[in-house]
Length: 206
Image 1 (cartoon, rainbow, N blue to C red):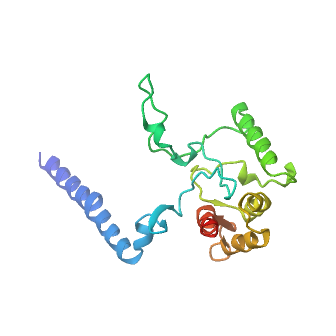
Image 2 (cartoon, one colour):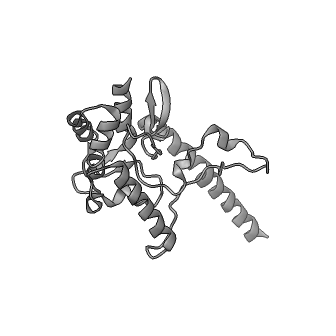
Image 3 (cartoon, helix red, strand yellow):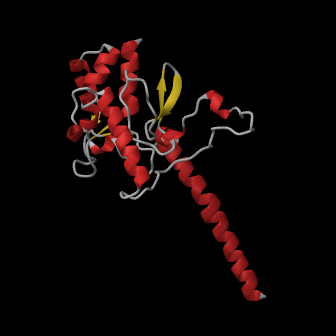
């Protein structure tokens, strides 16, 4: 019994210190040192939160740049999707993230890529299949990547220009402005945050 109570005390001490005190301390420190990041890196527009710079969003309007593929469509739902149909079912799947996790040889993945490829070529006349960056046809491991490569952004410029009326020269400058280089100059790849880029376009379209 002495060993049992000793183990019980140790378990309670570890539970309180590691499961309560340490998380609270880290949360408090992060709120003081990095308040914006600790709060989810929320991006605002016209005084309202419109998303997080860490999470991708699905853009379908041709006046805006499109991001990467998401297996869960970045959890976006129309209001009617949350209303049950006559069978009592809804299209709302709840909070989710993650890629489809399909193997390269999976027919479903090949079919989806071919469909997205055909749609991109149709909406971006003049672009050749071999010129399309891979990140526009593939999802990230999380399925929530908010970034695309600078090449993926630039190849969309002519189509965005036609739909929005913004000159290609202006769009080039916006893409360059929102292109972030490698971390510390060596880690990762240059990328463009799609949400931040599109908010600049929304400002020009007002």
